[in-house]
Length: 141
Image 1 (cartoon, rainbow, N blue to C red):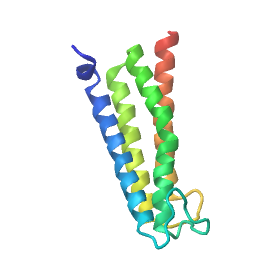
Image 2: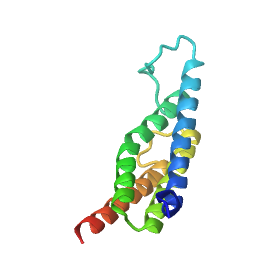
Image 3: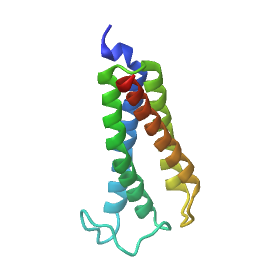
């Protein structure tokens, strides 16, 4: 049996996480580039949550900020042979949480903290922590 078979659930979740990131990248890039006077690589400093350009950019950047830890934890989990079912479950929880975070960030323009998207940010973070703990238990038991 190959790793692809053993970690099918994990790899399918990773596929959707990466696909979500790609969609966010396209949306953020297209939205920003369509603004009058857009300068590549710069977001206007006066933009805030009332601007979809700002929200699309922040959604993409937030995913970029969260993804390295999850990818590192995922690959460590696969390489050390953590339980494939739990690894996949934590990956899918993260994937769904990131999609919900994205949808809420796109839909709701609020400066309120915590905002509804915070719930899904925290669910994704907890899934990442749970996977890291699973790795720790595998390594040190």
